[in-house]
Amino acid sequence: MAIFLDERCIASLLTMDDALGAVEEVFREQGRGGVVNVPRVRAPIKGGTLRITAGVLSYCGLYGVKVSSTAVFGRNAGRMFCLYREETGELCAVVQVFGMGALRTGAASGVATKLMANEGARVLGVLGSGRQAKTQVEAICRVRRIAELKVYSPTPANREKFCREAAAAHGVKAVPVASPEAAVRDSDVIVSATTTTEPVVRGAWLAAGAHINAIGANYEHRRELDTAAVSAAACIAVDDLEQARYEATDLVEPVKEGALSWDRVHPLADIVAGNVRARASSSDITLYKSLGVAIEDVALAARAYEKALAQNAGVELPDLAG
Image 1 (cartoon, rainbow, N blue to C red):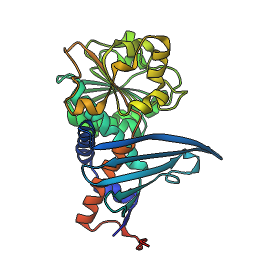
Image 2 (image 1 turned 180 degrees about the vertical axis):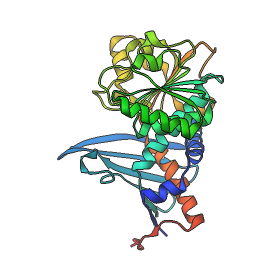
Image 3 (image 1 turned 60 degrees about the vertical axis):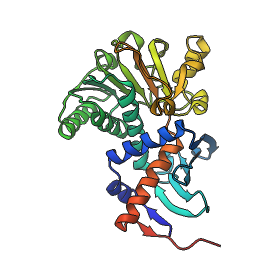
Image 4 (image 1 turned 90 degrees about the horizontal axis):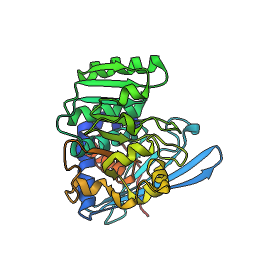
């Protein structure tokens, strides 16, 4: 039986704890060889860009394909995921994934922070105040005892509102700040969740031992980190190496400049599986460059599907066999 899970249903089924568990598991299994990620393919369409991703999770017998498009078509239009059973090709679920996208991206940063940031990290600096920033803070507060949050975004009202909501949700001291530098300086963990085309995280501002989650720039023309910030990192992880080579301008530009080589960049899967050690000392700076990959979507959709069956949730679809 195939079911349809809309945004409201997904929100009722999946928690951040679900997402953290599913994402950590899928990257661990990828590090062990049981997962295939198909890097994002982009194609121009009238009014925007078509994006197609896919992933195979052999360890749980499922695969999935996501078709999405730029937001010019509306909030949910062009954002649909299909989950299949690997052995039979049977369609299991059709899932709306607008909300799930922010959840899985936050969870990936949570997993990276858990394994790459110092245990004593207490101060979180955030650049951006949108829906992605919200799930970033939620995930990081799950894996570290964050006591203070510093938030910058260009519109004062937005960063002030974000801080009020974060303080209430996570019991932290949340302070709006007036510049990217103020958010980055003296922060143990930094999140950049922006749409900027110019770097907003500079190496000169980084404290010893800081961990960076750079999640906003996954297009060729976007860049959140300057070369000094990337060069300062003792360990750099990405969610997909192949995809990073053409989407991660934060890394591509330092490589072009000769300040970075790709052999210094590791799959997050290798860190989760224990194949690569993230830091040698508490003073090391570490970096997770997130692009958003299909295996995260498959992992969360699978978790939602399991919970939906257990709770008799979702809408049954007609039998499409034959």
